[in-house]
Every structure is written in structure tokens, then in C-alpha cells.
Length: 161
Figure 1 (cartoon, helix red, strand yellow):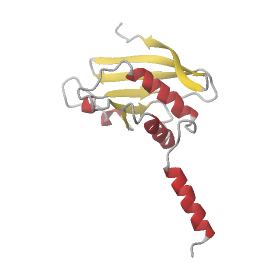
Figure 2 (spheres, rainbow, N blue to C red):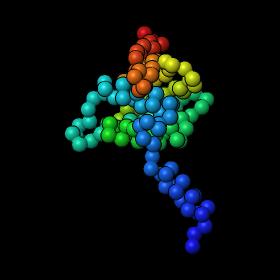
Figure 3 (cartoon, rainbow, N blue to C red):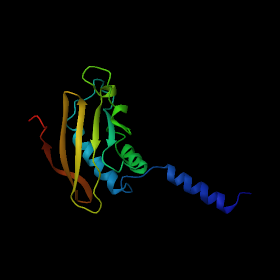
């Protein structure tokens, strides 16, 4: 006979493995999901119709993207893209190839932190496809009809512009 504690522990583990629903996703995850979806709209489609776009995500700033938030983002975007989180840029970029492209013909998104307790939220985003194809912007994400949505964005001029 199993102890009641073991049964409760097993139930908690199973509940934790089921993954978050869209309603249960954290605020940070919802903001990142809205930001990534906005960037995906302007990316070229993969060559194969059956393939999903590959998106590498790396957090920038002093605080990295928490593992729980990463899992929530990946689950929410499962039908939209193949999301791969990286600890550092070099995990996503083929630095030894001409033009330093992103692995697997993907795009690298360097996402800034989500400010706590603000609405709207401004997120710094670098969109990188290769050394010759990158841009920086600030995306404003607000709560619209109980869903986090990109409400505006502004391009950050490059230093050579």
C-alpha cells in the first residue's frame, strides 16, 4: 500500500508535467509570446510547407529568461514555430561560416526583460538572421481584451545610420 504522501507527490508531479494552458501562462511568457508572434509575421516562410520556422531565443540583460517561462513560451508557440532557447548567441549562430547565419535557416531573437507590474510593457528585441541581416526594435505589448498584444513598435537606428 502506498503512503498518502507518495500519492499526493505523484499527483503533483503529473500535474506539473501537463504543461501550462494559455490561460495559466505567466505574464512574462504571454508578453514574450506576443512579441515572438509579431516578429514571425514578417519572417520568410520555410522552404518546406510542412516545416515550422526555427526561432532561437536568447535573453539579454542581467536576468535571463526563467526555465518555467521558456517552457510556457515553447508550449504556446508549438503550432507556430520550433522554439529553441539558447543561453548565449554562439549556440544559435554559425560563427565559422561566411555571414554568420543562424543555424537551421532560423532567426535569432534576443529579448530584453519584461518589466514587472507595467502595462504596457516595452521589450527590446534584436532580430538576427545573419551579420548582414539584423535589426533592433522596441516592441510595446499591452493587455487588450484580456490578451497581451503588440500595440506598437519602433525601430532602433543602427549606429551607422
